[in-house]
Image (cartoon, rainbow, N blue to C red; front, side):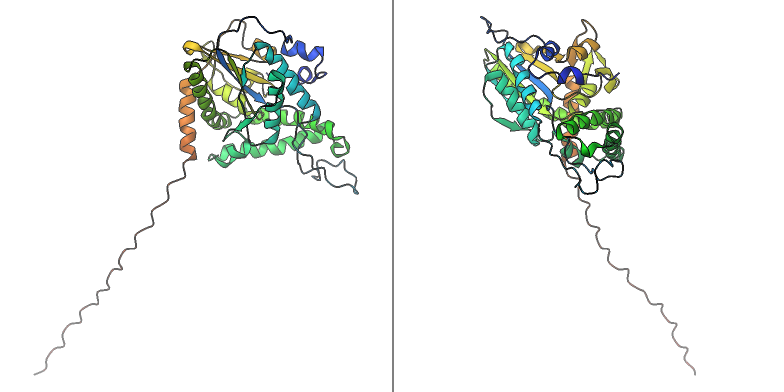
Length: 347
C-alpha cells in the first residue's frame, strides 16, 4: 500500500486544511513543562523545484526547436519554505527550549531545517551538516552491482514517468514542473525501495547517523536536561523510509517492505523518535494517516541492536579495500646446460 498524502500536505500553506492534517496549531505556552526529552525528527526536505534534467531527451518533446532545454535548480519553492515555517509553528506547541538542526550537504535540506527552526523559536538557527546522508554519498560507497543498477533504473524511470504525466513538460511553468517532478519521483523511487538490497544498503548509512544522534540525546539527558530539545534531521526522500523498514518494529514484529509504512514520504513528512529519561524511547509517524496504518494501540519501537550492527557494517564499507601486496619476483631458474660426454681417446 502506498499512501497518497500529497493533497493533504500541499493544501493552502498556513491554512486550516493543512493544520487539520498535521494537528491543531496553538501558540499558547503551557504553565508546566512536559517530561524532559530530546525529540529527533527525521524529515524529508520541503517542496523543491524539479532540478536539472535532460529535457531534450526524445521522451520529453514539449520544447519548441527555438528554446533551450530546461535546467531548473533544486532549491525549495517559495511555498516549500512557507510550509516549513508553518510546520515549525505546529511543533512549537510542545514548548521546545532549543533547536539543534542537522541537514545534508544539499542546500534545500539546510533551508528546510532553518525554516522549521524559525517556526519553533522565531529565529533561523545554525545547522550542522551530517556526513553520509545524501544519495551522492550513498552511491560512492555502493559495492553491490545490483544496488547500483536499481538506482540507475529508478533515475531512468523517473524520466519515463514525467513523460507520461506531461509530454509538454518543458513548456510548463517552473512551479508546475516541480510538482510533477515530485509525483514522478515518488513512483520511480517507490519501485526502487521494493528491493531488499537497496533497503539494506541505505539503512546502513542512516544507522551511522542515527546512532550518533541517540548518543548525543542520551548525553544531554544524563547531563541534567530539564526542558525539551527539538532535533530536526532533514535529508532526502527514501532515506528515512528505508531505515524505518529495516529497524522499525510494529508490536515487536519486523516490517516486510516499504509498503508496510505506506511508501515513500511526501515533502516535509517525517518520523519522531523521542528520547526521555531512564532510557524511555517513544516513536511515531507525524502523518496521522501513516500512524493509523501501523494499527491502533500498537507500540512502535526501534531495534537498536540492529541499528548498531548496521552502523558497524557501514564503517566497514567505508574502509578502503586492502591493497594487494606486490608479487615477489622469483629468481630465474638457472639454465643447466647438458653435460656433453667426454670425447673418446683414440689409441
